Image (cartoon, rainbow, N blue to C red; front, side, top):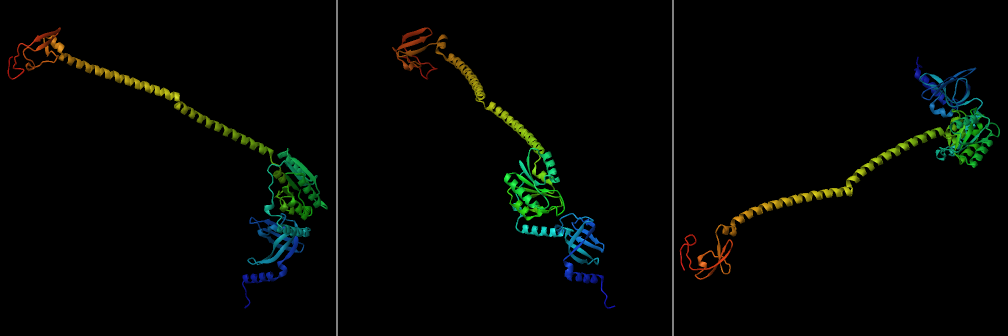
Length: 409
């Protein structure tokens, strides 16, 4: 009972044995796919079987780049990877790193080798990609004149924009001489000055699509001055031409969608722009009309004629106030003058004379107010109402109301 081990120890020991076996670390297994499941995490779980047994397999999401097709039950494949033990369950399974369909293994190896070589040379680099023109006038097409690809392209182009000129180079797309034919088509259309070139064909096996995996085709696309859209096979098919091209389309129909702009969308956009422009113009007109009305109001308010009328009215008002003030002033002065005249009238010598009074002056006209101003024999002028009386002084007598003492002469 001394050699007793836990389950985990046994599983770990077996796993180490598998790990140390170099043969199991790099092995290729062929068989028929069954129980194939694509997990949401990106992993693929499946079983390989033949008449001798079954082998559980898994391809992790990180190794999916080694799968050039969508695997399904019944496919006969060759899987490359390693055999290892899943320690928790104590079960061994095959961890696939690459999978090819049986019979295409050698070609696939060539495909991977050329892909790696061209990638290392920088032919897949994004900085070499040319932009696809948004509004092409001439589209070149390199494909078979009798294949499904050209029919799909014609259908899409007719629907989207029948006014764009399409130039077809009838190329061989599979078999002997296909690669050279595709290269000639690319170079001829490039020299013809088209705006964009579609290179492609319908789907097929790796053998049927092999012309688009040839290095001469890749170099022709890379050296082309015209933007190239690759449209080879179905969405899951990838060729060397897809990586070198300026843009990859999953299908020929999708390539046509990218190359032929939709004139209906353009017309709708133009109509929308026209409506926006009209609204903008009318809004501008309304804004300027409102400004013009405001300027008109200000101009009317600031008009010199209007201001002159205001000044004239102001001058008239001032004149009226001045005239009224002058009339009132004259009236006041006239009233005061009347008062003064009345007072002067009461003090007038003539009035006194009319009442029986007179006044006396000497010969020189000097008014005499005191007896001391004359002496006996002096000439006098006596003024009465209707004239002057000449007299002489006989004597003088001082009165009690005019002086303190009386005197006679």
